[in-house]
Image 1 (cartoon, helix red, strand yellow):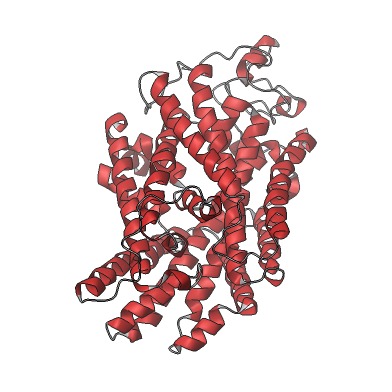
Image 2: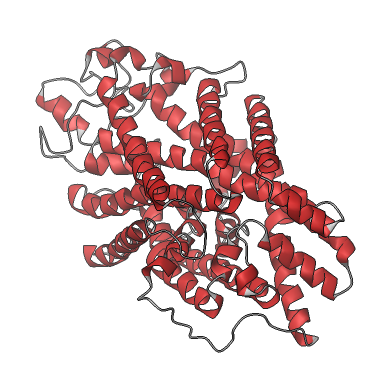
Length: 533
């Protein structure tokens, strides 16, 4: 009965638009763009046009195209570029979220520091590296422990956290700025500067490149394209409405901070709380500062709880299909991916310990944020390229949602997203002029070596895989890529036969054959793929 009920439910345009906003909007990055004053609006709009909207549209086509096949970005990229590259894509998605935790929890630690009523004491505490390190580790491992107990309640907490810790504070910040200006408050932002930034100063662009990560995550909403009535017409509407609301929140929220905090006093980890506190002081309502700090902290904790188990679940599902060693496939009695969560926690702990070698909490925050941007952008580059490739490799595949009837519009949309991501990727290596990052050598070493190591690891794992890695549980059967089927047929095998010994040991029904990890081949190596119906 429940299945039938859900099958008839269709998402409305505004519902999906709000879901997009909830998935993308986070307030912790507003201070980074407040550095740019009026020109911050240019960056927000530019990133929305060349990244946010292309990401949403491309992900929608790919998600709808493979709506009945598991794998997510692993499936999308793997169909176009081979299983090895597909594994790299989903690996980056997981590792990116792992590196992201210390940065978002740093913001959470600052929020906790401002719960006190003594402003000067709170400022000192928020800047203390030992305090921040302790809070990051305690909260993260608490979230991991809770995730190991099961995910049933995490969805409810995340919904409440998004409302209490993001949407309401964002609206309140904008309202406070309007009241402040209407009551004659002094605007700290230079209102005479140009809307267009000085593009000749490359070091000033690096913070702006991180705005792309503000919009990251929209690809997860693509899965809902099949839940809409007339998706070809209504999904783009939802995307543009959601993008408009998202940009408005970011632009107005950034301006709200710039109005109350002088440019020279903007701090990436503290300025959001400082902005609220100064508005409340102006209105003689300082008693509200601890309340908003608690709300923001709750929003951070709810978000972390959601993400701790989310991306790790995706890499776990692919790993059970034979792409990760058995050690990383272990679960606890609740069916939660125990060892992956423990490995993830170990990486988070090591990254958090980098506090001791960085000159300030702010520099550590910015360095990890940039590494996160770089890794996520590599995944997006693969996704945009795959969307174009699949138009030619699988031209007749059913697409419930399609970007244009011909390939020209896909080239424009995905090409724009690819070029925008590539630009942001290059700019992310430039040390920011506004922040003391210590040694330039350390900055480049962390980013370059970090990228090389993270990208190399999945290739090493893929080359080392064994038939015994594949789970024997029929529920873990991974449907083969479309380019694997012609190869199997060319070898004279039936669809349920396996391409490797591991798969031969566990044949499945023709409709959903189980296969071992794909051999080191790319689409088209053995046969010309035949589009599926």
